[in-house]
Image (tube, rainbow, N blue to C red):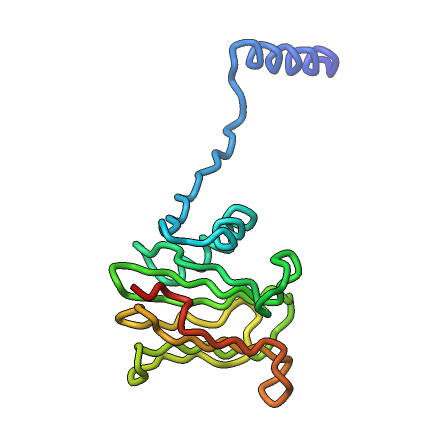
Length: 172
């Protein structure tokens, strides 16, 4: 068969297939379920969740299933959320708490994250050089659990984030 007839047949076949709606398989995007946000979450937390749902979902996945976002805190405290160096995410699940400190710098940094039961006692700590996040750290009863979050270039340098609070989780 001459070359020109073969090309014409191929063009005709593609035209027929297109006319009847036969196309190559297409990838279908599967939406990940949205992270639940606690009813008592503040406006900053809600704004962070709306502006960066991927980070909120990724941190929640590290905590495990069933956790809802309690608070998102741009760090250093008082920083415009668009200029934050880290974000402290607290999640709750039936009274249990989970924290993740997201590294927003883009480099490996020394990070320290600690949560304790109210009144001291049992604490969970994660510290080291991390490019993405510190944690998860967990507490079995999150009511008024004290939290410490620190970040520096190295463990021996001055902390540019040195955050401590008893109010990351709600105090009933």
